[in-house]
Length: 221
Length: 412
Image (cartoon, rainbow over all chains, first blue to last red; front, side, top):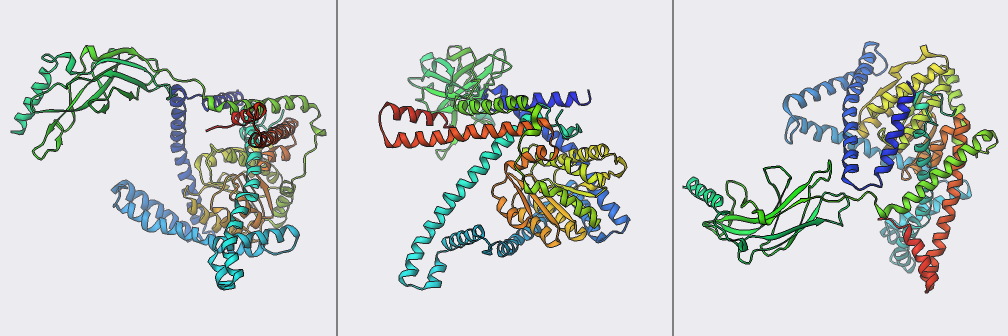
């Protein structure tokens, strides 16, 4: 029963979700919205477990004086501070919580995001080496796309000569063609496989063929 | 003075239904289901507008108001206001279930002309006369649709794929060991990665994407985690799973705990190794990057759905020297993983991983069914391309048929 009941619930929920996709009636829409609300409520309770895990992990690290434990102290102090400010003084626009969010968390997020530019450069440097035919094709395509996106650079490179003017007018179209045809064709192929894989995965979970998430030994028999 | 004026207005409104002539208010109200609205919460109301709107002292008729209420309710609910000469209006919010019957009425809407010519509301809200019995229709009920006809092709193809997968599954499961599975380098390397971590005595980091538990990619990632942790448990290799979603964390704890139990090492299971970090995208990235720089894991797995953080994670892992295996169905992030990771599972390989790693007969048979469905749908796509080209290049009955074939697959 410990296995059968979750499998039955999974099957019924899966069938309902598949059916409601095709049913525009308000009954289906309301039931779908209601299920989403249930999910949010469960998520809110799970957040308590998440916070427990967060505090436990960092407190344990501080207690055992593990490597870089002061960072855990910063994490816990920040967490408690934001909770106190948020619950004590509200989170309306203009509040202290709002100020901390806008002027501490958002810049910190932006800082992490900005690292992406440097990582793209280092990854591109490693990848765009003409070590094989495929890598060479990738390199050429990348150069064409990059120059096509910044056509003014061609005028800087070649000057206002015939070649420079021709490249300046042609390269954006070639770049667009690469992005719109070979690139999209490859993407569509991947998306096509993903769609079929999603259906098959959903089917085997709904039918209980795959039950490793329920502790059934990886599915199968 | 203002209170007195409003009091007079109120008295006039109360007296108005008694002393009016029918021809000066909307009449002949009819309602029918809105065929353009499939949810079944809207009706189209039609009526005859007043020839000359009823005059009320101190007020000016500014439009016609549609009302609706459930049969038996005393209070009218406010519907839309339309111009004085309008003859029809849609009325929404008529929930068709649990199958109530509705009354719909139409009346006039008044406002007080201000000194500067502007229109003022009465008591802070528009003033109106309740509909007369002659201007009420009911009981009526909107009719919702039970199927989206524009999704017929999706339904047919979905059923076809499911049928192919299921039929193949039950015809092949007895001889699943004979089914050829294309070697997937990324999955072949899983054992190497675990072996490397065991030899080096360093942990494995497993990231199951930044999508929620409702995403099929996250579920696929959790299935792979089950297989991975079963093998790492056998060697007592530590596996660290930082989570971005508390629901995913809870589920993954159960999966890993079960894997350790099945591997006969329940005591080696450490729930604290599967921990919640934050739901903030870049906060999570900072935490995982920090973890990798501190712990210097021997192997890092990135499975599931990823956004802009994919390259930041993979490049950091690359700098630590970990063997990296990624798998995602996010086509925008695949190039980053291919660039920075040693092995990458592309798209459907992520979903095939569970069958590949477990080699369970039913799962392998299902993979075969999936491939057969792929071949059939590819054939339909090629037929569609030929039909579309033919329909453009030629005319006549055959071209119309080809065009109809293509159009049948079109969805909004």
